[in-house]
Length: 210
Image (cartoon, rainbow, N blue to C red; front, side, top):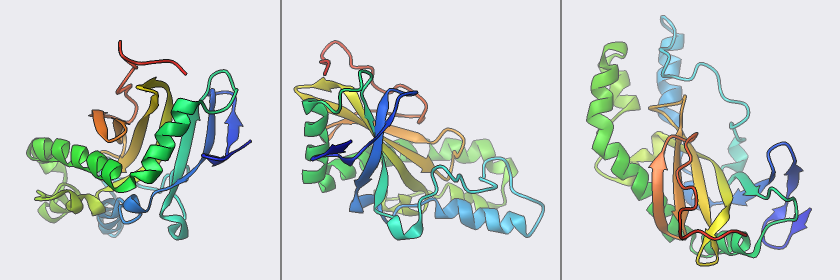
């Protein structure tokens, strides 16, 4: 189907959602370059540790000439098409891309800055110091995440608050390629940050249906 707000969408009945693409120039410069650098070093040596992706993830590996286009997932169990609340959420994101994406990035940075020293301690025995500094550098600003973080998809939930659906931004990250990272947001308010596979926000008592 084609939506005036979402563009071309393809139905995935197995999962109860629609799939499309969303253009977000803000995250175009963000990618997991650090993983690639460390992986190349270990390819020339004894082989990469488990924390470094050995092969690109073909499902999430977007072409380099489409770096500002990302997978879009629109929940719709009934299959009737996106709701008005979901349309409002995407329109808000498009119209306020800078502020929404900056809030998302800041929330990732806050989490990273809080735990990076612990993460470094946990894996220090597996990496050479230069590789540890590549994968888990101590950063002083969110922009330092450009080599560590890649947006994979934006998920538009069915539940909403104040007539606007909740979004979930899912990322690949250099320091944890197994679980990734996700951020749930309502407009530019962050509702949760955690593993990409977690349900960061279930709607709560204030949530509305479609």
